[in-house]
Image (cartoon, rainbow, N blue to C red; front, side):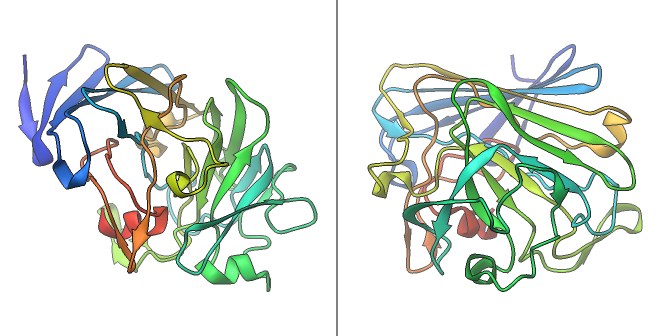
Length: 288
């Protein structure tokens, strides 16, 4: 039973420990084959937030279920002094159009090496071409290992709040709010470039055009479940917003597709964490 409906056709169901949103994406919407039934469930458990994504299609299609939330663990100000650890030995080289070139480059000895915890902004203004192309970090990091493993740890430098991320996804997109325009928020907050960090576990962007990348194809009749959760050491509710940190599933997820003439192509949904889309990550951010 639906409790109420919000924009973009999401039915909302109240749960004892959270909230569930469901939407039916019709066959052919934004050019995608198959009728897609998709839902996202948010659950609170102590100092943890768990997010569960579910999807099923009646035809083979591309699918990417993720969340694009910004985190500032201090509650305001710049996030560039946050310390970050990423368990990734390589990252994907990006083009001026913010699409992967197909090359995976080693992080060792570069500003992209987060194996040891360091301030997010320590190397962000160096002369590295990859950083200058996108005005900071907006890159896919290929997480070491396979299966469920620790991918990232983010710590607020003044609050001491720590957020951990475990995932089965092949990689994590790190974005440092490079193109965020200055704007006012609640309680006098000011949002501006580099005031937050995004960590998005996912398949590589533009994977459909790179056969060597993991291919997130959702097969007809195969249900998928992606689970996620965040944990902090203190003051969870006052500092965190819903964010997908863990995706679990053996048969892939939604795909990041192609970009043509600077425009994202494919199904996209602004509401909460569910997006059916194709397009490079940067341009999707501009559209949503």
